[in-house]
Image (cartoon, rainbow over all chains, first blue to last red; front, side, top):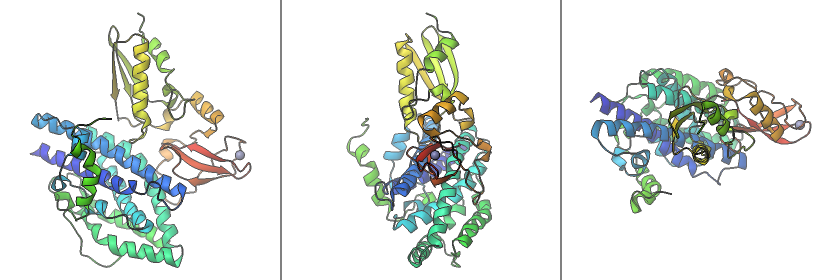
Length: 247
Length: 164
Ligand SMILES: [Zn+2]
């Protein structure tokens, strides 16, 4: 059972990175200007790479426990919606550039804090992946925070779009800090530091943290919004149509 | 056949980064160890650079090819994540080659990586004219390992191999 918890928590972290990566990848060739197109897709590449490391580890744990033949590919491409454990915020539509930026900002700020904890995990493989990944996430946080400030403290139009994005996304941020039964990292304990970091950037961006308290949950236990049901068929279509196909 | 560690390292010195062909994988500092398990069998342990770097698969393939050419019949590539790769492991020779190639080499130590959010960006010396009157255009460049800067004196934009 302890091992099942570990497997689920590794899958949860992998699913976050994969699904958000899949979402961001849709910006490829559609970014507002070339440099930003390249930046968001580079972040995507890092996320997919991190997902691969976690899936490889999850596959080895599953195969060890159950004598199965899982791989990073079967875990990404052959699991069903209810098996995915990603946070709901990762699967939401990209919306406009402001919405994509704000989602990445909320997520990367959380991911940085989470990796800081995971680096000191007693599980050597998790600690190693976290130590590697955080170097990438540090760059994401810096870049994405600058964009929140640029848009929030920009024109009336960009400021309004950021406010709309906050209105839409805020209710999905609570899930970061509500631990699933399989999580060993004390995510609830990261909340105050996350809020401080968000406030620091929001202050510069002339944006404010909403008052509303209701938070959406469910992703960690496989209860998703309708959006994941559209992401998976597209992402998995090749392996579903041609099982086991390789390049 | 003579397969000392030295010999294997001399072979690895001929394997280059597919995206920055002036750099060998030894310059990059990704080779952690070489183990001759038996005659004509070798295990090469490498550290990935970026998690999602597509060059890693190409590099592993090129290493295998080079070893097979040299007469090895069993070549195993093992990836190790810990300790995480850092640009601190790049050789001085590698940094010079990068500069001559037109890419500014990493100048900061990786301990400086976790910069404070509103820290001033470093002024990276221009690889063309050497001026430090340069600015950051984008933290993310043409590949995962590079950022885009511009020289305000000679006006050339240039890649910076960012500290990692
Ligand atoms: Zn110059």
